[in-house]
Amino acid sequence: MLTNGLKIYFAGSIRAGREDVPIYEEIIKHLKTYGEVLTEHVGDRTLSILGDEAPDDRFIHDRDMDFLRQCEVVIAEVTMPSTGVGYEIAMAINMKKRVLCLYRTSAKGKLLSAMIAGCPDIMNKNYQAINEAKSIIDDFIARQTV
Image (cartoon, rainbow, N blue to C red; front, top):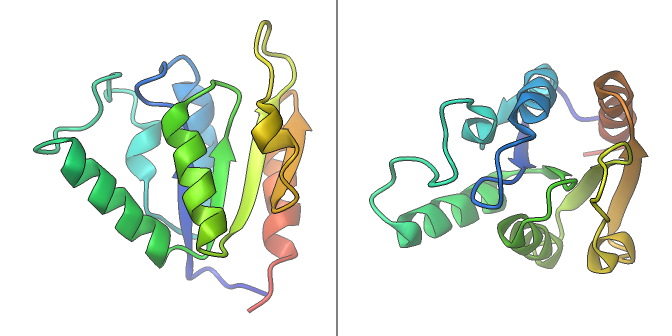
């Protein structure tokens, strides 16, 4: 079983909308009990849809790709559709990372992408309340082996 030294990549919408930031913040707080969340900034309430204060988009891309290479698992909250999150998930699969996608079924007017839902390399889990998401994360991490 993985220990508290786990390196975790958390993916959530930034430029596609920040409505779910309180949820991201809760998930990241929970993930930090398992190790280092390389992308903790995704849950920062002060981060706008413009993103962080990186010098440019290329810097953000290269930094996040480096984070993906470093991580052991990727956990994505995919309720808010985001091309960036989809890209991160695809790259993680390409890198043979273990990927968990969390989708909140209580979100009105949001449908999970068929490309995510139908991918056999992703563990997709639906949830309604944050405590349910935390339990799913616990189960996912418990199943990971070194």
